[in-house]
Length: 529
Image (cartoon, rainbow, N blue to C red; front, side, top):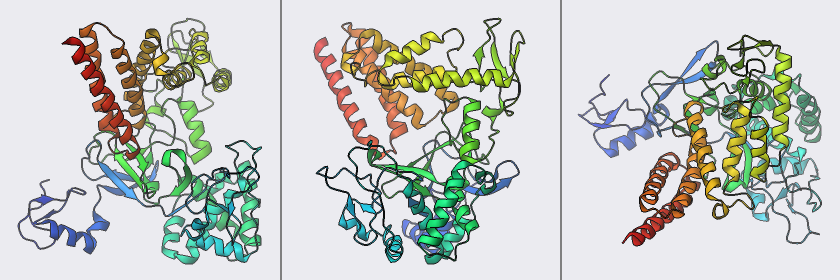
């Protein structure tokens, strides 16, 4: 369909297409601004709400979307600590640093006694309303600095804060609370879990008894907790100094898919920003992923059922071969050639069968063996590549090259070679450099199937590979080979820049990589004169 030719504001002839929705045009920048103020801000989007029996409410593209294009930016409706959190400031949400002297405690709010990073944060808009309520109830927070505890020690007392902030929305902003209360909760399934038995006692006692909010029913309190667990996003900022949860009602409408077409990030104001990882066709469902791409179907579906309370039936989950990778399969112990795959990937209790000799194994037998391997991998020393290389060698017969456990071990190796003590980039041998490049190349092929396009996973692999290729180039004496490696490093850096250009925290790294590459090219040029 061709775009309109009349200005959406004054109806005169116009050619400047709105870059957001691409459904209206303007005769001038001024009229675009005026139309935005008068209502187009609410209408300008490239998606629409849809619904079906499988996904429920979800969003579909209303036009073709280009790779890298921003699809949504949304501020949080509410933000706060996770159910269990390391000590953090309720004002700025940064993790609390140890006091200057071990005998000292965290700074405590002068009104409500919760730990904060400074007196300044006592006046934070995030904290003021809850502070008044808790101070009025004479509640005393028991979170104190303890030098003997581990740095990552988590406090369960934080489980009440985000829920309390949601309850206060009901009192102070009914319209915002209505948006929250429209979201899915899966409360029936969650009430049967041990976690909710604990939350039921702790949350209800705190909200109704300690704070005296008698207008909140037990069901309402538990439903809010379930809404948060179902829909909240983990927000990370400032290099890991902020790790909280944020609720974004618009973002909660995006469907899950184990091979998603979008990725998300957070800006400095905790707005969530969604970008297209690849080209998305008009009418296509917009999707993100709540799980990790290298996990097998069994691992992903169990995780999603436990955490998000739904059974994924996406194309990857339905396929016994997992898009031809056989990520969840083992090598057949009988014929030594075929791969043992599930006879029905969407049924946990389904039998498994070799694709070549038809040997059958019960779900219990197969999954028990698979779980043992998973536990073995989790227990390995992750500070050195040696234990992971030994794991790969130990399972070379029963596990094929794209099995989930092998892929996860290989990914861990890409992070250790070049970074682990004794294996820094300038300490790696030519053989180790080659090994890291090969691992990155293998995983990039897999990423093209599971998490391709402009994905963070793929970007991180390219970052590791680019640095390694540059290190290889610097160690070469042959001019032609060196030039070829430098050219490869330059191409990889360009691809990284395309993917990570919208990630502010990556800009310094990209600038440093460009300087390193330029210096290497200059060094090569001098050496060939």
